Length: 295
Image (cartoon, rainbow, N blue to C red):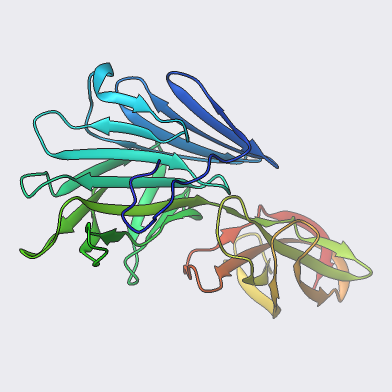
């Protein structure tokens, strides 16, 4: 079962889960999440083969200190300390990362490394946004910690370079063991190339849920235009804004009427704010296209 003081029942094994001695894999609807336990504790999630985000516990362990439980939880015991780490694949494919402090002498910090190219950025909420090529692709949710009595225990993140550091701060009255948990979700933003439809430049934006909890997002699409090849990109027309669920069939749209068919460069940016989940200033910029449309 998962390392979770807040739950009275074991977590059920997700139905899409396959297990072996050294790997646990979950797959459904284009999402593939895997856990490995072969000398380190690692997990990764891929969505539609477009976005791949992985993290690992920096600490390494001997094979005898690694185990996989019947519900797919992969556990690593830290030698010489009263601490253990666990990763589990949740029912939606998200990664649950846990730290268990068995006693007051347990290490209070845990370091996580991400796959190459993934940059963590601490948010005001305490969550950590994950970026790849400056585009938001995931989030490490705020850590939730409880002691054996069910009382909350302070836990927070900090960033050292591209490494995520989780710190648990028990109080003298805290009852051991203490468990700190966080979910790692992966999703992505999409936008099509700006194109001409019925005499108008048009661009769309949408989002793919992946393993995020969010069910709605505010999607904004803004067209950009270059009057001359040497010009900077200029915003043109009113942004298209729409609150939508995930998927390719639900899109926000921005349009601008063409005045002539002279060739000009166009592109768009797409901003997705997951409602009640994460609001990031970073945007997805679509590739420039030369269109028979000028203003």
